[in-house]
Structures are given as C-alpha cells and as structure tokens.
Length: 109
Length: 228
Image (cartoon, rainbow over the protein chains, first blue to last red):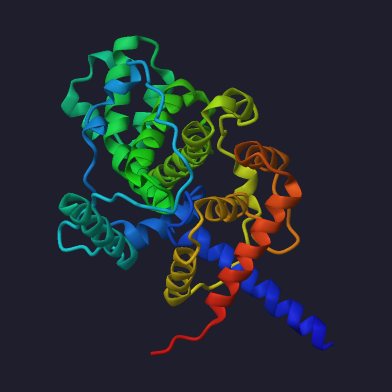
C-alpha cells in the first residue's frame, strides 16, 4: 500500500512537471489552451525584433547555412525589452544581465 | 471578392480568420504576397517570442530564434492548405489555433535548425524523418487532465533547468517534454529518438540514461522546499 502511495505521488509530480513545461514558456504552445496560458503569462512582454524579421524578404532570398557550432554551455544572447509597463520574467532579466556582463568582460580583455 | 484589389487599409481590417481564409483561396502571386505580408506582420512577434522563450536554454538563443521564425513562416507559406479548423470556430479561438499551428511548425524547425548547427553533415539524413505538421484536432479532443501548476512551481522548474550545464542534457530532456513523455516509463517517438541518436552519435540506451539522470536532478530540485 505504501509503495502505491509513493507511485501516485511520483506520477503526480511527473504530471505537474510536464504541465509546467507546457504552460510555463518552456516549450512551444501547440493547443489553444497552451496559447492562452502563454499569453496570460507573457502576452504583455514586448520584444525587439531582429532586423531580418522586419520584412518577409527572406521568403524570396536563398538561405545561408548557419555556422556549425560546437556544443557548449548555454550562453544566451538576449535583446528583449519591456514596453508599456510590462515586466520581463526574472530568468530573462537575469540572462540579459549575464550577457551584458560577459560582453563587458570580453571588451576589457 | 478579388483579394488583389483590396487596399492595404482594408486588408488590415480583416480578422485573422478572414485573412487566413483569403490566403488559402488566393490564386494570384501578387495577391498572395500582399496577404502573406499582412499575416507575417501580425504573427511574427508572437512566433519570435515563443521561440526565444524556448531557445533561451541553448547557445546563440536569439540567432537560433530568428532562423526558426524565418523557417516557420517560409514553410507556412508553402503549406497553408494543411490548416483546417471547424466551420463554427469563433474569431478568438481561430486566432489561438493559428498560433498553435505556428507553434507546431516552430517546434519542427527548432529540430531542423539545431541539427544544422551542431551536426550539419548529416542534416539530410535527419530531416527526412521530420514531416511538416498538420493541425491535429484529435489531440484537443483528448487533452491532458487538468492539473493546477502554481507559478512558484514553474519558477522552481526554471531554477532546476538552469543547474543543467550541459546543453546536450538539457536538449534531451526538452525533447522528452516536447514529445509529452517526460513521465518516467514513457518513451520518445521513434522519430525523435532517431533524431537524438543521430545528432549526438549515440545509442537509444544512452539517450534514456541521460534523460533519467537529468530528470532525477530536476525532480530533486523541484521537491526541495524554498529557504525563504
């Protein structure tokens, strides 16, 4: 009986983690429910689009191959900004700061 | 109604539903290009945002997100006929379904773009197994049971993910989550497992072990009570 209870808790935790992945901005929202959850959480966060996404000119141009990369530790490069008083998620702000600090250190070398 | 004769201001007034339906019916290249530009301008911010949220766990997050966004719109422009929704769908729900469709496509393009970056030599071999998504109503008829997930738990998950330093390990775990089989005992689809094995030049058993190790660490952190 005790083992069953343990398994039930384990399953509940598994399901919670899967759901947290789905609705916490960790994955691509695919269903209307996930889209609604994502927009509720991040809908007011505006972003700065890269120049290449201003116009859909890439549709008619030939795409270039990306530079092959070696697997490395994650080093994000974020260029996001909050507008209209909305707040960016903590983790994004943290990553932006880390990136700025890293760029500063590299410049000083 | 001849779409090509609609002026830009009128095109902006179209609902998302009217815009997508017009795109699907439009026969002339000029009309299609004008409508697609409108479609792109409406949804590019959303696609880039969801993609950037996902790619934050990978190196070159912004560049990767940009490429995925471009490829998503490129493929959508070629596969618009695959988007089908029930006739009586409201405008609001229709927009959500369009975004879901874009999300499915972006997921596939993440896999393609990531493969291009780290294993470009075997790209063609990997991509042959990744079909373009169609919008699947079946999944919505049998959704996951309702589970309340507090924001605090999501923050814990984020904290836990940030402790995984190897990008490969994080990627493998995220692929399990993308396939909806993060739960212990659930298995990846054959396509995804094959993709990961080729990408990292390893065996399914090794992929499963990496997932287990990474997931156990995530669970431990998620279960640790906050100090404050």
